[in-house]
Image 1 (cartoon, rainbow, N blue to C red):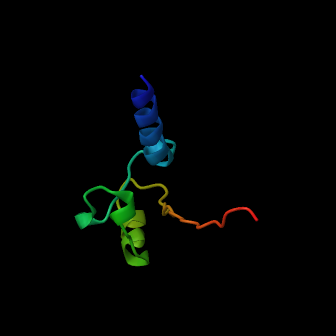
Image 2: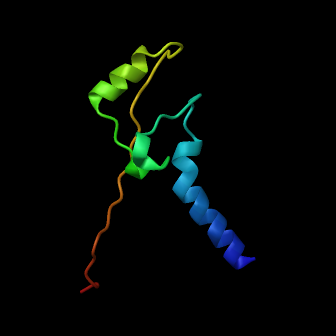
Length: 74
């Protein structure tokens, strides 16, 4: 039960941002394997998406992973 709860928390943490987007569709770079962290859409690609039939609004989404090394308390 503990492992299940931990796994669920990890999955929610990793997918929560995508799941909370209020969007009808997500667009990924062709070779990104539908992974946000592998997908990069430049300004030209974003403009093509905005001009596509039926698109009312388009905006970029990203994420940042940060590592921090801390010193032990003195």
